[in-house]
Image (cartoon, rainbow, N blue to C red; front, side, top):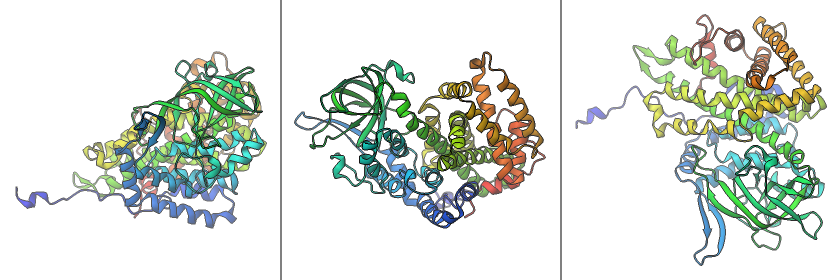
Length: 544
């Protein structure tokens, strides 16, 4: 074959060697909006450093290797002794080590920590998403452990450490620790009150012995786990260490690792407890209330993680279209492709704006913001995570056949996209949680309405959507059957309010016209043609 046939033309160069943070205008502006000005210089520097690492060829290689070489379970050693260890490719440890050193488990211990950590999580997830699971659970375990001040004093410094200390050893001997979670069981799934794992109190105060199983226990190589089990007074939260203080292994039998659609780099397991030592966290019979703060924090990470996947998909699609030529010009200049890219960009920016707003509410910590989170987190988790999969699929299509091959990285994004909609309660669970808040917590609805009402009068389509929403909220008769529709509208109105207040006019106009005004089709790329779509695409593009 003649060598001239191998000359490569009209291919986009790899999107590599760029600052993932600085090139994301929506994220940069959200950080500037929500952080105390005194913290901005330091935050920009740390996020830019993380962004350059995330966009580097090295980090991209780590992500590929961690997924091409998934974790391996070793139940026994060569002599037949039970060891229950999981081994990972070195790339996994590098990714996880960078996440920990960047403070992605330490939001609770520094000013503006949740906004800074959310932005960092959004940036670093774009390098590889699977290792974000133990990062998220370690971060989220802190508020649950605070139900027991003694346990919090012991474990919180380890969980918020910036030192990644791999290996199964007593936690007291380690410079940093990771946490996992075990809630669901085979027979119950999301209905955790159906759990059958039993807890028997031991002579030592607060100590128990567990017997039972967990159908999904993520990150089984972690140093400790928060699990739910039935004690005498009912469902209770427990801390289960992998290694006991004397250096012996706790009874923690990993039966198998799940063979998952995506999230291949991360280990999700089935675990059996049989005489497993555990320490009670909080009061007996109040396990759900104790662990709910951990659940809320991981749900927010589902929103942030989905926003990260969306952003990376949009970055790849706009980058490809900027360089690829077809039918006499650049793809990005073709009106129909520009419509598709702009539509994807709107979805991505709305997700980013909402995720950072929720993180800012955590930093505030006031009663109004806590009430707002009670209703906004499940609404955001419901909607943003559901939008991730169709967005990534459409972005992949923008690359055509180039996007369908593994080397592009797009198939990995697509396989990862459905996870956050399932983890920590699927769509119906989130919708029902919103209904529960509407019925039981009037302060939550008031805080939500105050938030969306802050943009009233700025856009007639948003005003109309708020009015329609109030009508729906006034009649909750038979609401469960229409809960998804209601929660979708709540999430869209909240996103619209944020964009009207903070995004450029072209972005806010396009979002309100399509998502709230009804001038939109059933697929991406059906925005009104009269909008300033070029400005929307240019804002979302990575400018190297």
